[in-house]
Length: 254
Length: 222
Image (cartoon, rainbow over all chains, first blue to last red; front, side, top):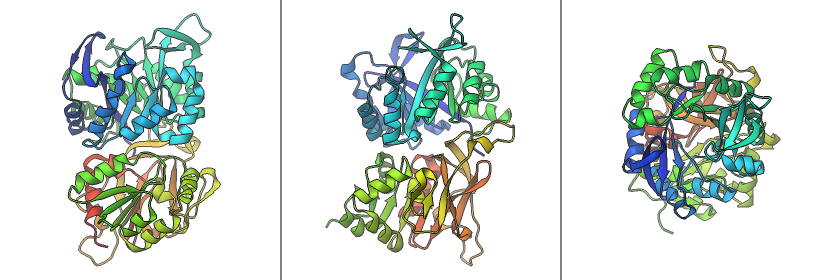
C-alpha cells in the first residue's frame, strides 16, 4: 500500500541553505547538495526547498542549487517561494524541480494556478496554504499571505477546494499559529481540508517530536508530513522518524 | 552521425532533465541525448519514452513534432523504456479527455475513482496516487534462470517506487504484466513485450531501486 511521506524542508537564501533560529540569525547550514544527500541517505521521501531570499536580485540563485541537487539526488524535489508567473514555474522545472509550490500568487492571481496546471500538469503544481485560526469571521481558519502578515478574508477549507478544482495536484497546509511552536500540527485544520478535497495534503507547521508526525497522519489525515527544525538540528533523523511511525502502525518506506 | 547510446524522446511535455540526469548517473560512459529529432531517434541504440501532464496534450504534441512513426518503429525494434504517460500512450484509448493513444498494445487507460477508494483504516485514498508504493514483480513460468524480467535484476520484490498519476493501464493481455501495485485494488504498473518495457512509476525519482532499474535497462540485451 502507498506509504505516508516524510519531507524535510530546507530554507534557501541567496543561493545557500540556512538554518533560522526564531526566524532571526540565519546561519549557513552548509552545502545544499551535501544536506540533500544526507536526507536522501536517511530515507527522506521527498525534499522541499523554500526560497526565502528577500531581494529579487538573488532569486535566480535557487536555480543553480536545484540543478546541482537534481543531478545527484534522485527523489522528488519541490521548490517554493517567490513563484509569481508561469515562466517561474517553467524555469524551476527545467532546473530539475519536480513540483513547484505556489503561495501568495495563488491568492493574488488564481488563474496562474490553472494556467500552470494546464501547461505542465497537475502533478507538478502544489498550492501552499498558510492558515490561521480566527474569531472575526464566519469560518474557523483564514488564509494569510506574505508569510502570515496579510489576512485575505478567505476560508481556508473553501480555498483548498477551489485550488484543487483549478488543478493543484497537492496542497501544502501550514498552520501559522503552530509554525515554530513545536506543539504539533493543527490537526483539526488538516482534517477539515483533507476531508474536503480529493488531492493529497502535506501537513506543515508545529512539529516538535515524533508523536506529532504520527498524530498528523492519524488524526489530521495528512498524506505527507513536512518538518524542518527537528531534522536540521539533529534531534531526530528521518530514519528514526520513520521507525517511530512504523511502530505506530503507519505505512512508511523503510 | 555521432553514436547515440540512449535517446530520451522530447515532445515538449515537461521536464526531461530528471530522466537524462538519472541515466547519466547510472551510465557515465554512455551518450545520453534528449531529442525531438526523428533521425536521432532512429539512429540511437536505446530509447526512453517519458511523459508528463495530460495524455491528450502528450498525443497532440507528439504528432505536432511528427514523432509517432519514430516512436512506434523504436518500440518494435530496439530496447525501449516507457515511463508514466509514456506507458499509457502505448495503449489504444484513455479515459483522460477520451483520447486515442498510439494503439501499440490492445487495452485502455482508466481513472482511479476517488469516491470508491478507502484504505484499511477506512481513510479516503487520494487521487492522484502520489508517493512511494510497493511494486510486486510478476513471476512467470518460463524456463530461464530468473523467473522475473531482467529489468528487475537486483531489485527486491515489493520494493517501493515513486508514483504520481491519476490513470492506470489495463492491458487486454494479462500476460504482459511484469509488475503491479495496489491502490487499493491491484493495477498493472509494469509491462513488457520483447524489446519493450514500460512502467507507470518514475524510476528516475525512485532512489536506489529506480537507479537499479535504469541501470538494468542500459545493460539489457533483449
